[in-house]
Image (cartoon, rainbow, N blue to C red; front, side):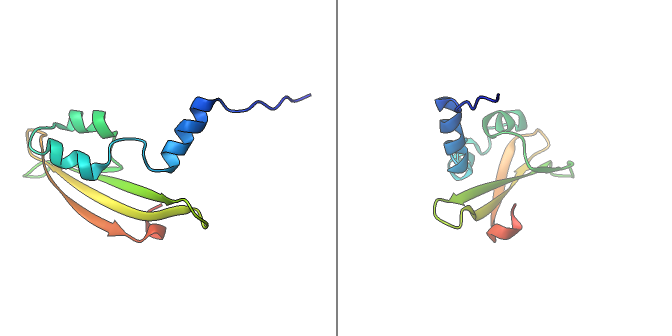
Length: 108
């Protein structure tokens, strides 16, 4: 006989936060506060590993992050997608970023 167990309240809250897009600091608030100061290690610690990385060129590394926002109304799913392209100098310090919005269906 199989017994059904309910998920813990902690698991339910964590899932709700992830679906709401609140799992960590919002990039739009985080990046200006650490520009010119944060190293790659700091950024990775604070917001997690990047989605993609490009090897260093003459100016430094490039990291890609995506910020997905989810709809709370039907149809549920990704409602917006913002891509952040972070640039680091040769000393691995965050120098800047560019922002690009993508249609939700192309950012899954």
